[in-house]
Image (cartoon, rainbow, N blue to C red; front, side, top):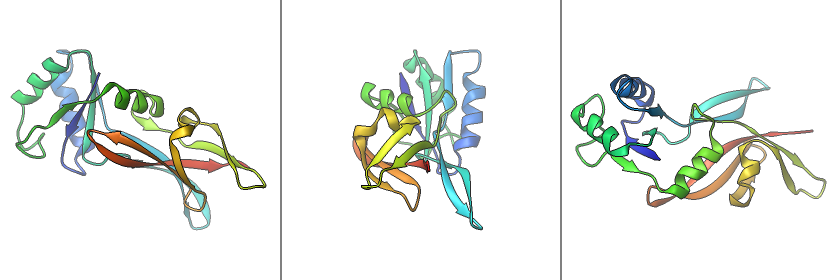
Length: 167
């Protein structure tokens, strides 16, 4: 089961280290933040960059969500919380399945390879988007991103994932 932890935007990596130290040895839990790889053009050259997929969120994969919550509650304070409201949310099975389908063990979503036919149709050749092809609502070839719309923590979100065009 995945739990989403709301943290300050920009503090994901620091908070991840803090939580890993807090949970290490006590619980069997994997802590990470989701990043996407995508292609961007700098100085006329395409390069792969990593960006946060969901800024302000940290994720914990655990079989003992109640115990994780108690440990986080003990350490709650300015180094962990975004606010004094509820900060840990158990994700629905459908949301967890989608994220596990997209991301690797470290929380990185790789670039998907696509091909464009002469008629303009797009085929997903490899990568995480191949598994969720039916969810893709738009592909922007110029920006090298594909948009998928999904429910995430009770609201509709559009996730922008990286693509590489195969010649």
